Image (cartoon, rainbow, N blue to C red):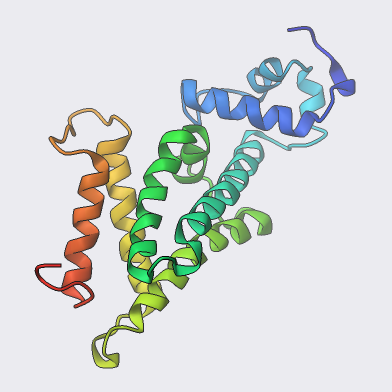
Amino acid sequence: MAKQGYHHGNLRQALVEACLKLIEAKGPTGFTLSEAAREAGVTPAAVYRHFAGREDLIAEAARQGYEIFADLLDFAYDAGRPSVLAAFEKTGRAYLAFARKHPGHYVAMFESGISVQRTPELAAASRRALGVLERAAEALSERIPEDRRPPPQMFAAHVWAMSHGVVELFARGSPGTRSPFPPEDLLESGIGVYLRGLGLIAPDG
């Protein structure tokens, strides 16, 4: 691809897209800014108009990933329709779908070592995604007697951790972690056990 220097259209987003491709191919620490510039078709000097270093570029990829992630979770939850229980379970499936469809974003968000506090924009996007799970957990928590009700933030964190564990161990092809069950079934059954423990699903429900 020919170098286009400072005249490249929407250079910032072109660099993010290049970053995502390189993350998928080489991991978050396996490429340089010069490689990202080459992938985007611009000179290395042009990169510094938008990003101070590779970590800043990855942070922007992560921010965009969290925005997509939050949108997918929000769409899956669908304001608690058709029921808060069914909607809550759909958010878990959305987590798996995101990891599969957006692997570069997923790695930038969760495996790059970039803190969500690196920029206010990244922190806000991360918080928006967690906020969807917390709203879903709060709606479900209202069905639990107050003396047995976990804080919604804890409830959401448990489900996030369970979803993340299934993705990491079984949905992304990690070596040595083959499962005889589809990741969707593992996650759905795990959430079911958790919700039964809270009394939200009857033992035979």
